[in-house]
Image (cartoon, rainbow, N blue to C red; front, top):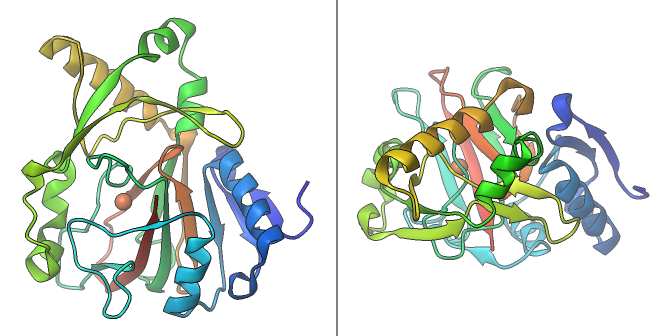
Length: 270
Ligand SMILES: [Fe+2]
């Protein structure tokens, strides 16, 4: 199936490691990466040497680049957001289960993280939870119930407090309360038609058309299900790794278990 890249699925079939040289990509390589991404929800590449322009060129092969509403980008490269934790900081940006920017009307389909500086290996991992697996393992009654449901996602949801340090430093001044959107909670992958559960615990505040208690109970039930151990894989970072994920197919959660400087360059793609 793959002629130009080597693809090794991870534990629980959550994500896959790909061997390829991203500074020298071509259309055949991109198509195969897209196939692997549609199949596994997230893919990882180690030992890459990407300058910011090459990184942007690679990202553009997957769609139009988005600018992150809450923070200013890297000097000269506004599409690159610096995601960092400094050694003296307690809070980590984006900590907790979520999927990116669901409070916008057109949330980014994909996110890339390229590691610049990382803590010792095994610390500061990013956990990914497959929402393909999460959807597949719901019973038919629940699948039926969720089919037409939508949820409200807010930038002021539970994860908003983790942005504080970076917003103080490089914030755009946008009030998170002003950003919210409504989306269906089931997604279908356009490439292979696999369905996934799309409910970001960091942003979802209610399920539409249910009374308050019912919405609260269903959200809690789904969130408990989405993050079960058997749907999770944790990626161990080192410098020069790239992770590329579908925000429709996985949740992610960076583990805040270190006091060191961690710097990632992030690009989101519409
Ligand atoms: Fe994130």
